[in-house]
Length: 44
Image (cartoon, rainbow, N blue to C red; front, side, top):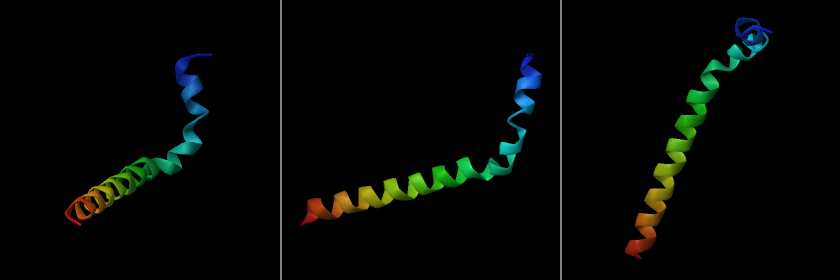
């Protein structure tokens, strides 16, 4: 099967295009929260 034909079978997943950005944003928020929590525990 040609590469272009293979790619077509995954086209329905394009509806989830914003998913990766949303996951990265949540990961970033969690990282910032974790850093904040670590900073507060060091001050205690």
